[in-house]
Amino acid sequence: MSKVLIVEDDLPTLKIYNEAFTKAGIGVREFTSGDIPIAFMKSVDPDVILLDIMLAGGKNGFDVLEDIKKDPDLKKIPVIMLTNLESEDVIAKKIGADDYLIKANISLDQLVERVKKFLKSKKD
Image: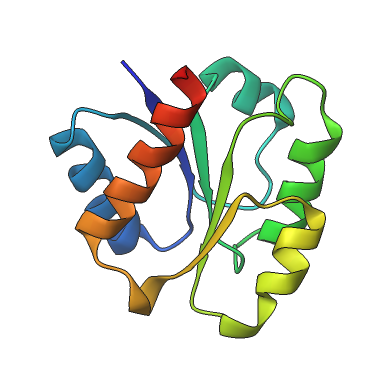
């Protein structure tokens, strides 16, 4: 089963995403702050990472993205930045985000389809 790691500090949003991906047959692991350990991400071994920018804890999503892209075991995992900050897409892509989505502009079905696209390209 394919797995998505969702790093999101808003619990109601996290619950909605979890339900949508589970319903689509995609396994979900969650982390609720920017202080996510690299070892945890490696143990999850996700196929795609959904990463919010504004996170509780010491690190924001950009910091976490930089950590991911510096790690040889994690850097090839597609990372989708998911946020309500419309102006940060250039920074996210410069750091290495594979996609940048505005929460308010995308439906759950569209989000699931976008993740499936990355899952399919990973298998090809």
